[in-house]
Image 1 (cartoon, helix red, strand yellow):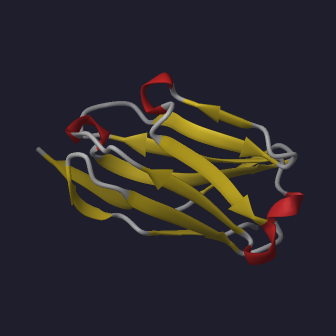
Image 2: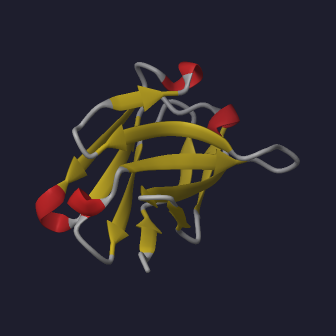
Length: 115
């Protein structure tokens, strides 16, 4: 069982920045891929960014150049640095991880961007 705990959400004005953290209960080196998803009210959950155990990254087109996903294996933590935030980035952000064939999810952290 993998536990994921997110932190770092909050309220920020448009153009501002936030950094989300996702702490895992075990070595993230054992996880095939980790990522950040988000779900806005009335919308489906969508992938924002992901990073593999080898360090390869992938981003949703609308966040490219503004968001950066990174990992600190020593701290078993994955980060999502979010800059130039827009009101449309408002959502609950979830950390996710895949280990072999099993997916794990955190509880989510709210990000609200005011205009």
